[in-house]
Length: 579
Image (cartoon, rainbow, N blue to C red; front, side, top):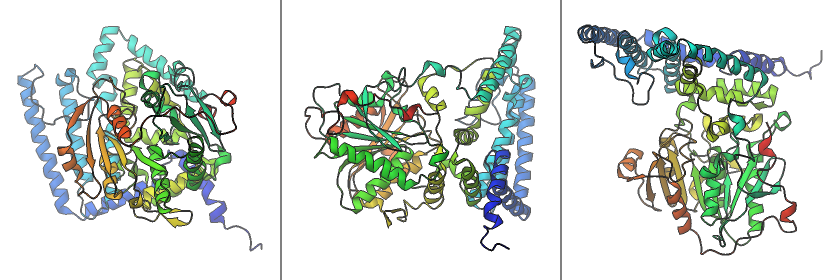
């Protein structure tokens, strides 16, 4: 017998778990079962809770009966509903849902939704995580059964079918067949071909001034005679491609900053493949932020840098800044965090997918492929916003026969990336699961870092309807940084709230400065005190940057010393083109 042979738990279990994950959409069935068992067992031993649910069901039945009686006597669709539509739910907003029998259908659905929320929450003894999971699972099943998803129970679809003689359904079948073929062949969504990287989007002129195994660093060409001496270094997330900040010329944040007289550098991350499976968080720090900052310091010597981090890039920038502060390194003039979290105690609904069972399953699956696929990430976001990202689109595409109009932001969103296995495992465990960064346990170069050591002024932007980085979670920077913090809350979601160029209709924001040493406001108190302003937050940010910058000077040369600008690769480089 060979005693040195690896245990079967190491050689056999991971591929078996990875196979199971393929059939469960990368969800841990065991985690769902534990949540169900926790909820059900505690509910069974809680007769008072069950009695409350019985009373709620009877009360709802009475409300529905009274509603039906009123509808029978009044046929104008103006009967007051017994269940109001939630503010963020637009599926039954059309007036046709107020007419019989569709008014009854959607009211029954909303009452059922309320009952199941009451049933899955507030059960004494159930852990917070399991309660959230059960509430989420109940919503998912109810969303599947929504009357709006079916031809004969959706009045809007029926009216359209009547008007068009069924042509909308024919278009829907053709749309479904086209989507199926695109899915099998791996081709992008319809309309994406109108937004080609380097031709239609990511077209701001610049050069790739540094390339290593993980990043390309782009230096953009100046458009003003003078620039602020402090350059801007942008660290985007590697869960997305950088050009969300350089979309079309009209809504490019990069182009806007250049026009305001700044020298802008931006990291473009490599799209990892199987060979990059062992890339770690330390690699992203060293080959990414540290390498880029060193290059910027070489090209713009004797000047401190305005650093900008977006989403996961902001978290990495916070780690880098804390490590620099620990060593007395003051090369950062300021730090701007865009929809980025540093404290993960309340990370929003993404926490549904973060527990030991789920992470272990993902680790086994990523161990086989070497990375987390873009499809897996997209599936997680679709579940979090199933109506907005899945059901509403199916209704429009397949029942109404209407394709949503493609734009640059949607085309960028479809141009997804992968996540290397080691890095993603560390990210989920050290940040989401253990919250090491906020609690002072995150190690860089073998020693822990503390965010409170960061002395550079911070400009932090959160968005009102962010499902990835909820603004209440982002607001926790006030408790982590001891220096000056200027916090902005803007309308929109995780991406659309950041891509908020001046002139964009319907944009608004709130902004309030928290001086060093001042008492920290609770998030709700901040919301009541921060004045609402109409328009884009970009000009306010530039004003803040100007206040932390010196007088303009002639722009620096493009490229590292000893290189010729004409010989450097043109932006956007090649890493962003990798599929």
